[in-house]
Amino acid sequence: MAHLPSRRRLALAVPVVLSLTASLGFLPTAAAAPATTSGTTSATRATDAPSLAYVVNTRADQRTIGSVKKAIASVGGTVVASYEKIGVLVVHSANPDFGPRIRAVRGVQSAGATRTTPLSAAGTTDEGAVQVLSKAEAAKVAKASGTAGQSEPLEADQWDLRAIGADKAAKINPGSKRVTVAVIDTGVDDTHPDLTANFSASQSANCVGGVADTGAGAWRPYTAEDYHGTHVAGEIAAARNGVGVAGVAPGVKVASIKVSDPKDGLFYPENVVCAFVFAADHGVEVTNNSYYVDPWLYNCMDDPDQKAIVDAVNRAQLYAQKRGTLNVASAGNSNHDLDSDAIVDESSPDDGTPATRTIDPHECFDVPTQLPGVVTVSATGVKGTKSYYSTYGLGAIDVAAPGGDKYQIPDTPSANGRILSTLPNNTYGYLQGTSMASPHVAGVAALLKSTHPYASPAQLQALLKLQADSTACPTEPYDGDGNGVVDATCVGGKRYNAFFGHGVVNALRAVK
Image (cartoon, rainbow, N blue to C red; front, side, top):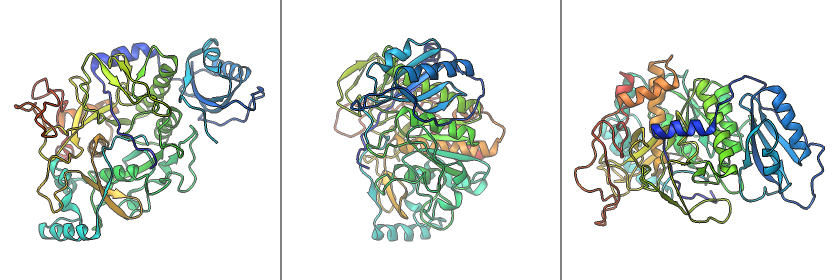
């Protein structure tokens, strides 16, 4: 991928949930027609002016939406997607005054630009470049796997499965084909032999631009460099078929909803809105979200553009929850204490020229990670301690899971502390990051849903926390990279603390 910045996360504390919900107001619940596309409006647009993309959020009733659509046209906007069931309209406009003018329209609750640079004719939470497994190394791992009696040729290097009991869980219940986890990401190579048997094409799409394209293969990565989504999918549901690796839930279905922009690899708000609504409307039980919504690392509610982004994506993910979908998200790789008074954001906006700003993490929100009801996941290494890069914070992290850590070396054939999984074009490789921790939790959630098919998203989240292995704060000062400097401070008790939330998820308990 041309652009794979190191991603960070701000997660959800109970007080933040209350303040965020209050800030956003009510979520429209009235059902209406599905998302539709519309043609160009009759508004005259300057031929030499660049267009920006916007989200316009209204009450979810037909009269209000119809009135707002007329107003959009009158001030030089074109509706390109209409999510009437949640009152979200995706709009393009070349009018530089479109934002303030549309916000003044009756019935508009929030509206703002979804990027800071004009539309042109990856935003993920992995840490560092991928390490592709060589043929020689694969042969060494396969030999070790066979000696150990493991079912998959590369399983000897999958320390992460053993860390959460996923290898033993698969012998009891590998997961139900009635459960689907949608990977909202850079696309999934469903032709990979470890993924093809479990792939659900009918629940997959390309949501780039805010409109779902369900054409054959639209959900696949643009190039082999867009490997992130395929790696995530393998962690969740790579089949136990005697080929390559195994996933945490090798019996469930996996779908791909591609949201990464082909130009810059970023995950813009309208794409993610489309993804959550599509997942909900196509019966997806769990979504995995190993990214943050670009271009803002944190969206501050006193900025009208950023507030509109929070509002739009929150409406979409809450709609998914109400339709029975649990949303799981990575916590990020900044090693920030999310319960601190201030955080320095040096990366926003990431679609243009970033400007350093200091934000209050209780007033400025990471999307979708910090939204109400989203499961926020921190990362651990093979030693069971917090990964050196992982975001943390008391009241911020729900659960933890293996995400890999190059400083924590496992006793495996490759001695690689990262996470091994599938890559495009029938290859395999190692990545580390909270991007890799989140799919472990999504996989365990799928196992829980397989065991408790009638559990609601809220009940699944409660079960995730109950079955997690309580993990206490370290007794010694935390020095993740071993350079002699204390990198983070863990506070809280054994059952709930800043590093691990309610604990490290346990796949074996999930199926029992």
